[in-house]
Image (cartoon, rainbow, N blue to C red):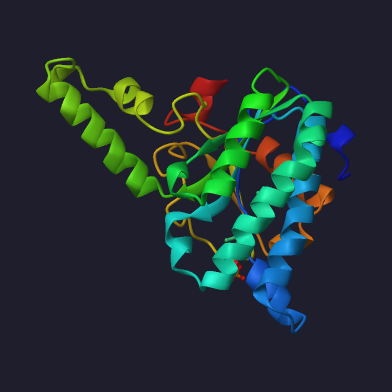
Length: 246
Ligand code: FPP
């Protein structure tokens, strides 16, 4: 019942976003350091990316590092950056094999030079892949994204490029990091926390939310299939009534 083949491929979420939470608690349960949890989290990332491509998800966005995560202990931040660099190096081949394009959202200029350069290299090398777009949210915060958008629009208003009356959803959307992505259809958060944590606040306006009570390193293919199956059983009304949809 929980295999990829059981899913209705005419009703897949086009854009799936995931808050990968619980690496630290997963490690703590095993009396290990938090970084051990992140290392195992990478395996779940690899498996999830491959499964999403297999299922036919067009856009997968992963919350890998938030603007608030810079406040974690230095050793943890350094480990996450090191894991990012090593994963990017290791996974380039797999990305190509699965026809996946990599992209990033967030204040990526604030990443350490090595991570920034590696990221740009993989983004550039995979830019012609077209089966799925994998977007990593790195040094990402939704409020910062909105603040930037408002600033940019404000400057355009001041320079008479945009008239204030013309500001609408499309203009706001066009000034977000996610300007090239469709709205999120399904948002999954692991670890049992029921929070959004400053992730894609604008983009999840009509997303279906799915919370699962397992830590990210334990997230397997059957959990992903179950989340999508649950999504497929929901009625998305976008403010309309059931009768109008039928
Ligand atoms: C949340 O767990 C997870 C993160 C802050 C980082 C996610 C990073 C990875 C899965 C590995 C690297 C990613 C890539 C794309 C190579 P937490 O540390 O907040 O766990 P806790 O809530 O139990 O403390």
